[in-house]
Length: 115
Length: 113
Image (cartoon, rainbow over all chains, first blue to last red; front, side):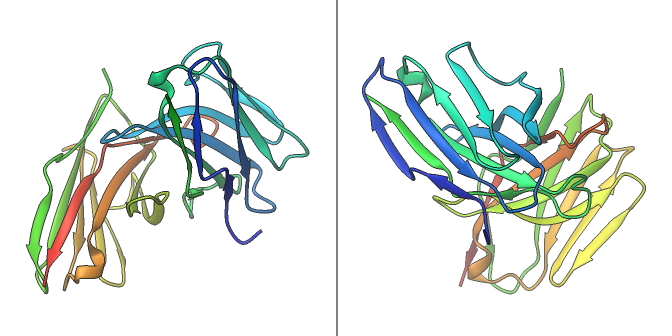
């Protein structure tokens, strides 16, 4: 597609429920990244995919968080048993590999609110 | 510990003036430094990248400098316009096999007509 697409754009969920966030990167971009941004905070790295594999999962906050990528394209970030501190904007970005000249292209994010 | 520091206070500037934003970092040896613009409710948008061996990079009204001795980058917007109002993020990319980018918290710029 023309840009990075994320869905849903907004999600309100009850504490303890599971949620799935979807990212559709730019076609042909082999690298995909998940970040989250809390109010007034910087972007916190979560996980990086190269193709379908995730060589760096170091940013996932707990084992309630997992992500997968299939077909070198769409990625899903799953949060199990959501907690209120999970409330944030979850941003996905993609880049060609290597991305030296062009930086990352971000989606508009999914705003997750856990009530 | 590693830190990327941007002025957390908003920068207010009169239209037509040059806006200068600062990014300082500690305990990093970045291969590249990037600047992004973020508008409310949107994801960051890539603006410029500068390499460790480059002193300065320009793009239209934007200029970025990179001083690896001072561990600082300056981001300039000349002839600023109200449409330049946004939060600007700096990001460091450390060479290490893939492009892991760490972001600062950003500085909010308000250009006053």
